[in-house]
Length: 84
Image 1 (cartoon, one colour):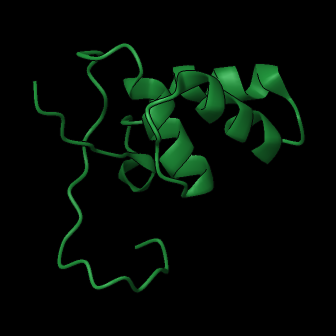
Image 2: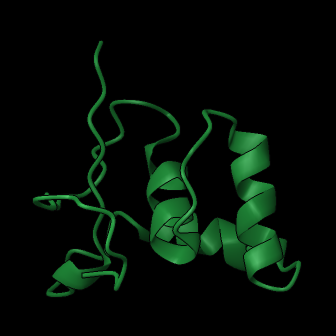
């Protein structure tokens, strides 16, 4: 779906439900940059801002918007699994 051929057999999509305080940031990082989340919100937000030409406000907005992307735009959703 992303044009990458990494041997994955399936993709599972969903949306973050705020079980963890960083779920929106993780989803935005993967959706916008394709980079894996390294469990550092500061690092992820810097990577997002860099992706948007240093625009911190846009990075914050994209992270906040991940919860509303589901409105008919399934190609821009992301799911991660956490073990609690």
